[in-house]
Length: 207
Image 1 (tube, helix red, strand yellow):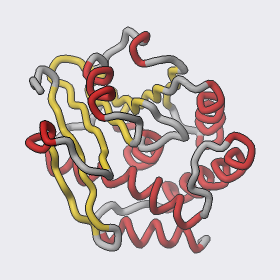
Image 2 (image 1 turned 180 degrees about the horizontal axis):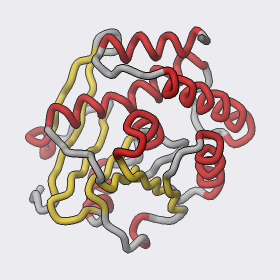
Image 3 (image 1 turned 60 degrees about the vertical axis):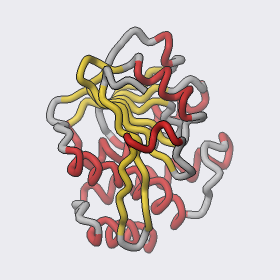
């Protein structure tokens, strides 16, 4: 096993997110495809293999523990990754949950959409890519996740329109949380990684 994949496996195991050999193989393919495309398309500013598996792959999988903490049921739910970029956090979640979730990636930048379509074929995973601005979609989802997409209140405004009644919006935040959103923020600590903050809102929550 490649060193960087062993790092991901160990980090996940320490935090109660076990990965099978098949899942690790898919993460390996993901890493190789991302490294190849990143040379030309500049999909992520993080270029070192070890940093990609920690700061992108593992960071995306921290949502697994958030779903457990908040008791969000995923079985047969439609989950959308808003502003998916190079596939984070949606594709790592699909690798982890596999057929349990129906995944949709929403991305407005054409070159990133092309990458995501290629990635779907390479990983042999079933997910759908919407190459469109979220406002134009006309489809709603049970769960919408967003990571490093932009200014928080802009994300909120757009992403809440993507939710079905009773649906959840989860915004992953690394930086300072806005005062108005602190009551809706959950912080989780991870062994060997530190703290991760999540803004969790349910449809019809008034901010």
